[in-house]
Image (cartoon, rainbow, N blue to C red; front, side, top):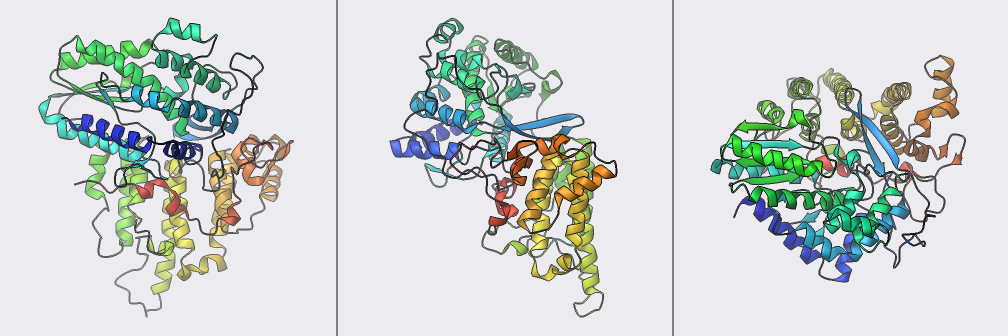
Amino acid sequence: MSLPLQHRLETELLLREQSKSQANKLEIARWILEDGYYPEAYVIPPCFKIKGFNLSKDKLETKDYNNGGWKSYEFATLSFPKTGLIQRVFSAIHPKRYHDIVWELMENWDELLDKLFDSENKIISYSFPLAISKDSRGKLRSGRMIYEFLEMAEKDLVAEAHKYSILGKVDITNFYNSVYTHTISWAWIGDRKTALNDSRIFKTLGTKLDKLVQYSNDKRTNGLAVGPVLSDLIVEIILTERDKEISKRIKSLNVDYIATRFKDDYRILANSKDECNEIIKIIIEVLNEFNLQVNESKTKIIDLPEGLYRQHSLNYEPYSLRGKYESKKIPFKAFEFTLLKALEIHREYLGTSLLEKFLSELIDNNKKIAINEKLLISFTNEKIPKEKENYENVRKKNIKKAISLLLMVKNESAKSLGKVLSIIECIWVNPKNKWMEEENYLFDIFMIEIEKALIKSSAFELTWLIYFTVRHNFKIDLDRLIKTLSKDGKLNGAQGDLEILKNCFVATLRNKMPNKGKWENPFGDKNIKFRMYTNPEELTDVFLIDYLDVFERAEPEN
């Protein structure tokens, strides 16, 4: 049995064990409603956490599906630069629609599992979004398993590659934003004509999900929210059906192959370029039927073993800090050198998570040690004895250099901001660094960073920076800063005119939306009764280093 097939069988077994009883299913629903509601941890700070979002006995929407009087909602969004001018937009779905999508899925959960684990489907998915731990069978974890699935898929293909000579790669362009909502119904029912007929009577899950998704996104029939677990589940419904159709058509070729999919990313092992080319043609053809386009620049046919490993990871490996300094801290010079090398490789391979990998190597994952002890960087010079006069001066200077370098990493990769702040937080809470508060050192740095975020209108950065400064009681007067920047001509218009302050996450942190008043959650909806947000000042026992998924990744397998 191939490792990908083994992965599918093990995943199915774990999920079916977790789904045996109604109590188990309620736990799955709770996990999706609370742990899976917001995008991944690196997107939004820990003050945005769901508490008390329970699955009701009935849907929250009281009107029938064929009633035309439904209210439509818009996504709550936050974005950061992906590459160049392209923004990666993450979204949250209004709880009323989110709840009802979960409710409908749980009503059809057993049938959903049957469809997702159909033995006729030969394309193995590594994308099931529930974080079920293999070590404690049937137990849901709080973390998301994105990185683990990706690494697992790559390693399983490496183990099987010796049987083949060719690797094929196919990637769907702008996938989540391109999903045509009617394809949810097409995929669930398996026939477009039947799905069209059902759109008038709403008997099947697919047609119901279609309407719920539309009315969570301003009645649009294109696009899924990027970030919530629900979107990942809906994607699996659509692509699993397409994978089954792809498998059916490949069968007629009578070729030996292994194919895997991680979200919208396909990998194929084949015995010849001609066979791989035929398989890719089928994938493109079948996806086109659902209005999904393949990214031509990322579609490749490669001689093995090339392509099995990500090139940026291979280039970084000789410089990796992992395991090099197990008995002691990472020397400051080694930290500097590796950071600069990581930046150099990152610039060659934009859009990767290389910088996040580097940052994860600076952290001790031992949860039993204090936060200030988790940072592995040594800021001292081993050649200078503690009793020497310049010992502390060197240490202080290296801390300042480290923070400056880390902020440069953030400037190169916006999504690393949370991880950078988590390392700065480790330095800040260390009792040996009281001078930072006494000299207003971090206060001054954050004033500069907030000013930069305001000027370039980065709601993503401002959200994280406000969280950090409020969490650690930095008395930064944002309103005063905005007035000063406006007076100096660095900002155009008054507060009420600034788009960055109208971002729903920024408004929630400030507890006010320009021209609309009090704003207690990302939707400004006073009818939401459960907690969607906690004031950062209350999170005295929450530290970013424990919150962020990147530091909870499984250790690499040998």
